[in-house]
Image 1 (tube, helix red, strand yellow):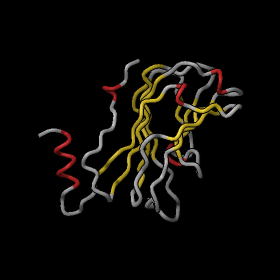
Image 2 (cartoon, helix red, strand yellow):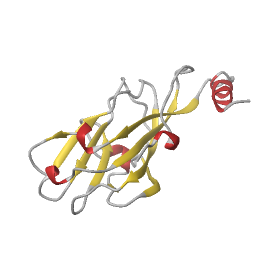
Image 3 (cartoon, helix red, strand yellow):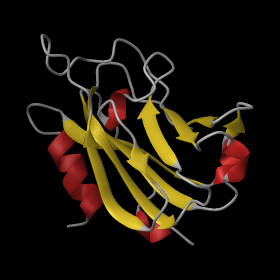
Image 4 (cartoon, helix red, strand yellow):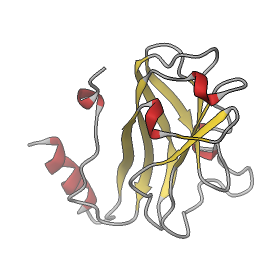
Length: 161
């Protein structure tokens, strides 16, 4: 049985929920330079309404240059919500840079009320333009309450660096 079949069977069970992800391979040129320390990028795929975000994982295939490049993962309203209210250091090749999503002390996991864009903020002390090289896979994991059977997302195998 393939991984796709296992995922489909999990989602078609009596609960109908499965762990899904939004994933994208990114390089410095994908980001919009904000003119200061930050470059931003909205990932191509959105997290669907009714999903519970669990956290994020970053795999750095090629280290990002500059002095101290770091990555925040979140939304337009909260830049580091999906990277545990902190950042991932991307200045060295690394696997399994994992952060749990920020969970409200009084509410636990909260369902996303509408489809939500994932916003990446790549920062370099002083000037984002100093970052010219690097490649990473960014994954945001969520518990889906929607059936998503025909979804393709990249994995570490797709990294070329």
